[in-house]
Length: 231
Image (cartoon, rainbow, N blue to C red; front, side):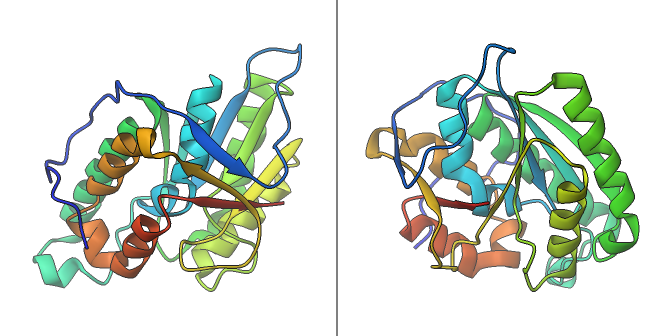
């Protein structure tokens, strides 16, 4: 059941922080080289929220610098006709949903948009790999990359994104399972005191995002907004 939260699509700042429960082995800790930079790479708007809500809030709690690399604007979604949008309108709405959700998740973390065409990422993997290398060079050895996709995902954009980040050769690269994938991994889940931000990040996608991936959002809510991260 969807929660009764505002459906306004706008960037917001999360002011409430809480604690997180982490199960499984802990990720690498920051070193004396400087503060950790966590880069989330999302093939489409909503992938970062569906797959990495729990981990993102863990990184915020830890004090990381958060950067979202938004690979596409989701212009090929099959729900476009349902809403009567042009491709341009659909992209604009999906960007707005993503900005709102990301703001709730990260207290206004940075967003980098690559603007690759939805459904055609495989032909532009070099652009993702180049950005990974640039960010790793800019922020140094404590930079870590978390991909809202798996190397063996069904969606070709997901596979291509995961491959492109891997090919960037960063020191730390991790991948994440979708909320309906119950295979094992390290699980990050907000506690009850921390659900406010997770719920509102989720609610930012209540329009187009939910129409596009309703089963995933339902599973995310039922999991307690968990993320499952794998090497």
